[in-house]
Structure formats: C-alpha cells, structure tokens
Length: 322
Image 1: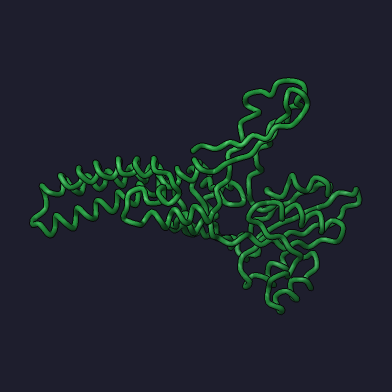
Image 2: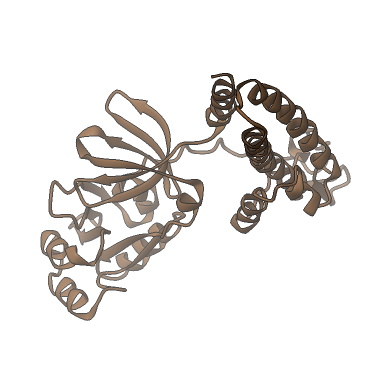
C-alpha cells in the first residue's frame, strides 16, 4: 500500500497544476476541443484557440478527455459568408482577424456538388445548412442590407438539430465588435486606453518592461518530446540551461530515493524492486523534464520594446532572462 499511496500523491500533485483538455460534441453539430476553465451554474466555461465560450449543458451530447497536443493542432473553424460587396469583403476580413478562424465565401473548400448547392440557396440560411450538412460542421453567416444602411447579420451552424442561431444588426464599420458573438464566443475584454507619453519626460518604469514573448508551438512540442528521454534535465541541457538541469537533478534524485525506500518495504523480490524503482525514476524524470523544459523556454525567450529617451530619441529595450 505504501508504494501505491506515494505514486498517487506524486501524480495527484502533477494533475493539480496541469490544465484539463476535453473534446465536446454538441447537439448543433459542433465539435469543440478546449481547456476546461470552470463549471458554471449554466454550463462549462472553455478556453479555445478562437477565444472563450460558455457551453450550456443542454447543448452537450458527450465529452471525452484529450491532451494539449490535440488542442494545439486542431484545425481552424470554417466560416462561410453569404453577402454582397462591399459588405462581404469587410465581413470576411473581420472574421479572419480572429485567431483559429478561416472565413471564406459560401461553398469554398467543399466538394463541387455541396458547394454548388450551397451557393444556389442565396441568403436562405436553412437551405445552406441543409446543403452543407454532410461536409463537416461549420458556421454560416448571412448578411443583408437594411434600408437604414445597416446590416442584418444572422449566423448559425450547419447542424440539423437545435442549431445555435445568432442575430445582429450593425453598421459594416462595427462588424468587428460582433464577430465573436456571431460564432458562439464571448467578446474579449477591451484593453485599457493608451496613455500619451511626453517625449521629454522620463520613461516610467512600467513602460520599459518588454511584453512577455509568445513561445512557438514547435518549441513547446520539442520540449514535450524531449521530456521522455530518461535523463533528468535533458530539455534544459539541450538549450544550454545548466541551472535548469541541476534543478531537475535536485528534484528527481531525492524523489527517486524516497520512492525506492517506499517500494523496498512492499516488494517481494529483487526483480520487482528493480522494476518499480526504474518506473518511479522514469515517471519523476518525465514530469520534471516537462516542467523544467517549459521554464527554460520562458527564461530564454527575448522580447523587444520601444520607448522615448529624455532628449526625444527612441530607445530599444531587449528583455530576457538567462
């Protein structure tokens, strides 16, 4: 029982800090792969590549566990737009500005019979949904000009059962304020207004801090793969971070020693003790390599920021932690 309790405690501590990813299938045809943020009274709060969404419980068909790699590598959402120019160009640009969204005119990317049938529907949203239902789930957006110069925009999924429908009336110039709502997302929080900087004044301390850099998906994937090498601190060592490797050794060695002492009391023979000891060492190594490898990536990513000097010039600030 002692080795089992120790193993569960080790894995429990890892799960407490690891994000939980799930693949959800909804009654309106959508398949969402996201990170669970919270369980609200009226649904699940999800973090998606496209933004945040609240999925009502009554839309949920089933939910399966998945992983971070599947979350990062999922395909973009497809949005078909039905509108006349010049509205169509503005709507396509507004949707395409959202990360993880690919907006195209209706029928784009679908097999010829589906594309032709969908275009023939004109602005009949239900007709487009029926014609495209077999081509994979997507959002459909129809915009019609009103007499006042505003656009009446309606969106829905191409699912046939209980499709989610959203209606918006807006001038074309403000379509970017509604794109998230039209595809089932929460509108992002507006950033605070920028403050004008006097070029003669001294740069405030906060203004000189570089923006936190974004780490490339390929680098994160490499660290994830390298973490399975049975050498504590190997991802950090590959990037020249000897301090990270030393820290990894300082974690794995004591953890393995405690594990070996625990399994030694419950093992029946030398072979069982050896197998359990190696398993404990490898599990601790993989977990530590993932944590320390991501820490090394953050330390070694440089960021640039710009600010005025006291005499009216411009200074370039390079921020990094090594």
